[in-house]
Length: 320
Ligand code: NAD
Image 1 (tube, protein in one colour):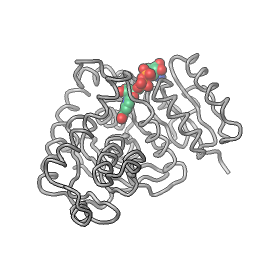
Image 2 (spheres, protein in one colour):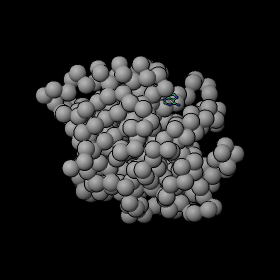
Image 3 (cartoon, rainbow, N blue to C red):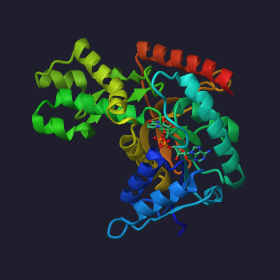
């Protein structure tokens, strides 16, 4: 049977952490790190590989773009993060150049496997890479709001499971909730679809004497939205949470699962009129995104999403 192989482009904080998370996950047989700084990629790969014995048996090494030829997923983390005070457009202009050079380098070896974009601004770069490579919808997709959704579920869990022990554990697995739209400040929390232990949040909270009103929801939303920036304030970047998201998505692709996550895609957003990439819950399998997951939005959520899509289309038009 063919090795399950993941190529990670960009061996910085996010790329190396994603490789580490993938190694611990155990799904991939081969993980290759590709970076313009080959020495750094070698150092990261060796460091991760030295922990493999007794945990997982993946081969981890630093490679070249030709290693993409037989990869089953390509994860792009090349590019830098936003500097304090820098606009998303300024970052986009710079990182698009990097993504263009990455797609140019991948193209000669590209066999059509799913490509997961992590680099920011992830929605803009996902749409850019899809255009540059001319791939069908759903083949290139971005981590988008998967991380935001995970933060959202954690914040909800702290409110609806108020014991100290449960707070620490997060208990987020019992929560069904998604953030959709842009990965960033304009993210849209889907309150209409929040479930707790299989019940609507309203039902669950009423049964357990927990306050669930607009003030509580606003506080959860603020906390969810600010989690990324408060980590960046504290340590200068985020890397571990997104790395776990990347390896979870990689597992869905490598094992051809039917795993649902709020990831960024142009799929189903309206053909030629809307060429934006935005997050919605999509089902992920071996060839990338299979379909959108069933979803019913409230009229207000639908309006916010459509506004985001139109704004993003406008932004991308001027960038590409
Ligand atoms: P980093 O600076 O540590 O690493 C970036 C790496 O990309 C460097 O090793 C650099 O050498 C490499 N690189 C640059 N140009 C390249 C090219 N043409 N080919 C190959 N490699 C190239 O940055 P980081 O902290 O790892 O962050 C990487 C990206 O991930 C940033 O854009 C950041 O904003 C983004 N990010 C996204 C999320 C998310 O939720 N989507 C979360 C965290 C970080």
